[in-house]
Structure formats: C-alpha cells, structure tokens
Amino acid sequence: MDLTGLLRDRSLRLAVTGLSGSGKTAFITSLVANLIGAAGHPGRLPFLRAAAESRLVEVRAQTSPHPEVLPFPLDGTVAALAADPPQWPSSTTDLRRVDLSVRYIPASFFGFGRPLGRAGAGIAELNLEILDYPGEWLLDLPLLEQSYADWSRGVLELAASGARASLAHDWLEFLAGHPARSRSDAMTARRAHELYRRFLETARMQEGLSLLQPGRFLNPGRLTGDPLLEFCPMPGVAEVRPSPGSLAAVMESRFDAYKRGVIRPFFSQLARRVDRQIVLVDVLRALNAGEEAFTDQARALETILQAFRFGRRGLLRWLFGARIDRILFAATKADHLPALQRDHLESLIADMVAVPRLRAERAHATAVATALASIRCTEDGTDTIDGRRVDVVIGLPQGGQRRIRFFPGIVPMAKPPTGFWGERFTEFPVFQPPRIDAAAANGIPHVNLDKVLDFLFADALS
Ligand code: GDP
Image 1 (cartoon, rainbow, N blue to C red):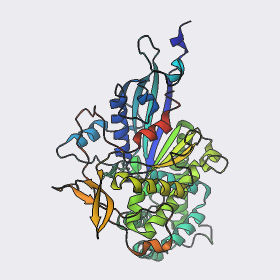
Image 2: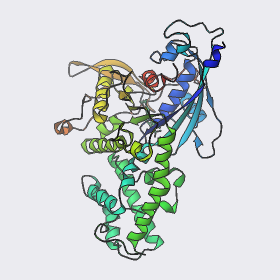
Image 3: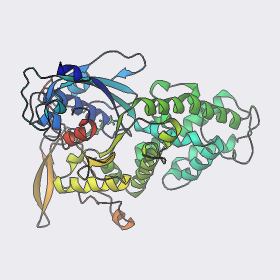
Image 4: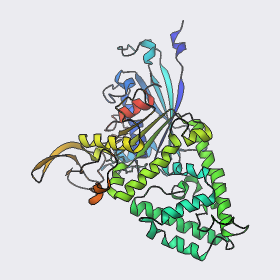
C-alpha cells in the first residue's frame, strides 16, 4: 500500500483581529517570517511541536490575487523592519489576506515524538489562509439585535458619561438644532454623521477609549466615503416612530441598510469561513491611559466576547453557526515588561476574558489567553531605584541614540480595584524594533509566538 496516499492535504483559516494599534501587522509579519525561518531550524520556535520535532519541511508565502480581499503587504512590512534604522510597518485599516503553504511531515505517520528520517517520508501540505481585519468591526455584532431607537438610546446614555460628555458636545448641539422630526436633507444627515464620527475619533485618539460604534465609522475600509455610512444615533427617536421624510427616518433606514448590507454579511462570512481566531489586545496601552480607558477596553472586550463565546451563549454561533473551534486572546507588546510582569499580564488578560491562561490545560481548552510580543525589542535586566533592586527591560527608544533601562511599574494580575488608579500608570516608550535581514530568513525575535502558534495549529500539523 502506498502510505503517502493516506496523507491528506488540508486548509485552515486563521483570522487575526484586534482594535487599531493592537499589533496585528506586527503579529502577521512575525508569524510569517518565523514560520518560514523555522523550516530546517528546529530551535527557532521551540514550543511549536512541528518545528521542534524537525517536521517543518518548507514554508512559503503565496501571493495569489483575490478579487475581494487586498493582499497583506508582506514585502513592505518586512522591508520596514529591514531598513536602517528599522521602522515599524504601517497598521491595518482594512481586510487583508496572506496565504502560506506549509509542507510538513505528519507526526501520526511515524508515531509521535520519534526522531524522523526524511528520506522517503510522506509530506503533507497545510494551506494556511491568514485574514487580518480591524477588531472595530466586531463591535457591531450587538447592533444586529438592536433597533435604531434602542441603539440610539444606548449610545446617548454612554455619551453623557465620563470623558465622552465634553467630547460629544458639538455633535449633540448640532442635533439639538436639527431634531428627529425635522425634515431631512442630504447635507444635514452628512453633517450630523461627520460630527458624530469626529466625536468617536477624538474619544479614541485623545482618551484611548475603545467602545466606539459603529466599527466602520472609524475603520471604513472599502466603505470610505460611502453615503451608506451617513447616519448617527439621535435623541428623541425612542418615543415616536419617525415620520416619513424626517431626519430620524433617514437615519433609521441607513442604520437598517448598514446592518443588512455590512454587518450581517461580514459576520456570516466570519462564522462560515474561519476555523481559528486570535484577538490581540493592547492591555498595556489601556493601563497607561487610566481607569476610564481601561474600563472601556474591558467593555469593548465583553462585546467582542459575545461573538466568540462557545456554546449557546455565543451570539455569532447562534445567529450564523460557527466553525471557529479555537480562539486565543493575546495581550500584546509584552516586551515592555520583564519576565515576572509578563506573567502578571497573562493573568490579567485571562481574568478580563475569563478563560484559562495558555500554559494551563492548553491541550483541552478551546479558548485561552496569553501575553505575547510579536516583535521583541528589549531584553530583561535589573536596575536600582531608591536603593531597591527592580526588574527592568532594556531597549532603544524609537529615534533615540542610547538604550534605556525601563521600569514599567507593577501590572495587576486581575482587573484592578479602584484604588489602583491613584497615580497614572507609567507612560510606555515606543521601542525601536530589532533589525532583521531583508529576506527575514533568520526569523524575528519574539516572546511566546511559538506557544501561540502551537495552540492555533498543532492539530493541523500533527
Ligand atoms: P495594528 O494597527 O493592529 O496593525 O497594529 P501594529 O501591528 O501596526 O502595531 C502598532 C504599534 O504597536 C507598532 O507600530 C509598534 O510601535 C507597536 N508594537 C506592535 N507589536 C509590538 C511588539 O511586539 N513589541 C513592541 N515593543 N511594540 C509593538
């Protein structure tokens, strides 16, 4: 019998998401470069079993064009990191895709864990399709279950609280002069939308807030400039059904069209096509930005979790059915912290999303959390502060001349109590990424990337 005939080639789709700036571009660049570099170098990704067992034969990036999805700009992201001095590649703003062909020797073919001779061995191929989309789009899922009036009420309530209250002023003042029942014209709807969008943008940029809906307003992707987006929540729509031709009626019909034409197709695709999901979360930035930003990020994560909960509570599964069978939440940029603090960060993200840490029971878990640095820019060290020895990280700040010893403070291991926020958390520097060679053949330094890949792909490469 020809045993090679038993080997089945297969495909796996991994979706990568996270709010803007959470580290998607860095993650995908590092994943691709490190997988390519790991074939033939078992020491490079020691916790990815297929690599450590010398079963990765060849990994190639494919650049076949896809009509609906832009290619992930791998050449550009690698070139930025290979520049002198190295630069951070530009961030994700739309859906993007990169395909990898992973040729490997299945462990099952030989018996798990035995040293493998390659000669004559059957080689299988895994086609890995990696999709990269803005996490902001996930914030729209609850809208599918809300009417325009419900949604408006919720947003207005939130807009009256905390830092949002003063930022929403111009938008709300405009709506006060153009109430729900007033007759609509194209200019008024557009202006109201633009003021609302600016409010969301300032909340994100200035206050580091995350729960900003609808997701396409800040990350429109291919819908940039599309009149479909020209709506916003309004006061006064809950009590009366908008009369035809009124501003509220126009807003409501666009809201419904957005749900039908944008949100629904996106989630139905996500549910039907994706096998594995990684959600990247910049927990450290939210800690830096203070209590309101942190609480807002936790609420945004709650909303994202609604999509991915396993079992009947998962909204995505309930609405569309879902193939996704493994999901990983990663707190990114963990190289801002020394080793012990990285452990704290892993506990914190696990607490925020209420799933086990990657190290615990990962063989059985379908959802786990971990701390991750896709591109490690620092090394661990120690320093003396006020006569006390403390753990620090050492790295070169972007644009700087000399490496600094950076003490990040103490990261809480669970959602911090109110008293924690007395002082603002230490401001984190942007570290210069390590220089890589232009082919990225030697891989990219990282923390925990191999564990992440093992959780996501070990079964597919076994
Ligand atoms: P995206 O918007 O989700 O694609 O985010 P990016 O991948 O572009 O990351 C945004 C910024 O975060 C980068 O420009 C870096 O400054 C920083 N960053 C991302 N990943 C890492 C990492 O692993 N370590 C460090 N130190 N910084 C990172």
